[in-house]
Image (cartoon, rainbow, N blue to C red; front, side):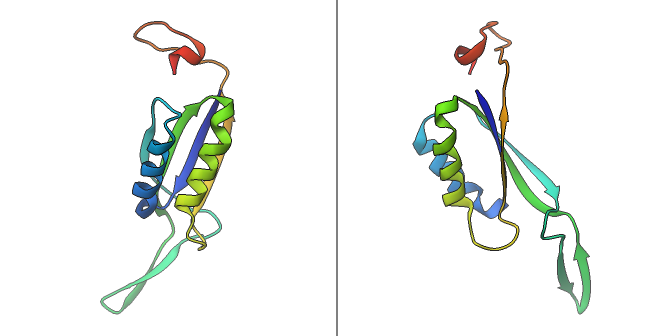
Length: 113
């Protein structure tokens, strides 16, 4: 099992989520609003003639735990639907999951997904 963690632009969330639902290869998803910075380092905005810098950019973090054989399809789907070609499109992390336990039933492993 793997955890896929994707940090994407908030305006791309609807596209990514719709595309992931069409794949039908995961049982649950977690989405969190986050702030951060990567290579972009921040943006400069102007308000009433004054310039100010925002160094922590709003993003959305999507997390899924999936079977190993579904990882590439999910990664490709996220990239296709989140990519704008601009700096700040985000990142995808794939993390090994050793164990999953469903608290309600005590099920473990793939059946707990």
